[in-house]
Amino acid sequence: MNRQILRKYFIMGSQNCDKDPVKILETAALGGITAFQYREKGEGSLTGKAKLELGRELREICRKYHIPFIINDDVELAEALDVDGIHVGQDDQSVEVLRKIFPNMIIGLSVSNDEELAKSPIELVDYVGAGPVFSTATKTDAKEAVGLEWIQTLRGKYPDLPIVGIGGINTENAASVLEAGADGVSVISAIAKARNIESAVEQL
Image (cartoon, rainbow, N blue to C red; front, side, top):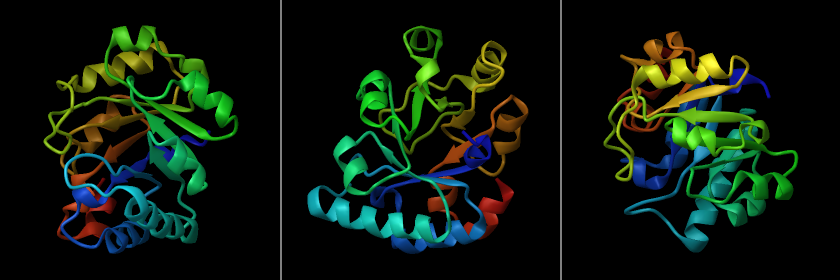
């Protein structure tokens, strides 16, 4: 996998937006994001047909700008939207099953500590999401922050593993995540809630 796609990895669902998510993604694409994850989850999120329709609109933007379109933990939507990748957490569909269903798809896995790492089939994933690096209020179910040390630990154990930092990352601290050994940073509110989205993407 081209690790460069992890450099500026934007995650968003309608529940994260104060404005039209389609316009937010288009502006972020113009600004230079390198990957996008559609994460329609949590309070206020869309379901059913509305979720699918928004996904289609966002998918088209990613195609237009040649940005990988990744879905968060939804096998049915992954097939319906013909996505480029799927990202799962420790309690979602197993990576082993996903790799059988989608042999050629990008698969990402969230890993937060040594215990999770020990039971994770790292050889089957294309990248890992390491975090939450910093405290975050965006995800109500987020785990306790693991700090930059966790990225350094992962990099030490897996020198060639593509790693993207996640959790509480913004324009102020993104550089420290890269310096710790991550290939990129993934953000939600740092872009979705930015006053100037293109400037925020550039600063990341």
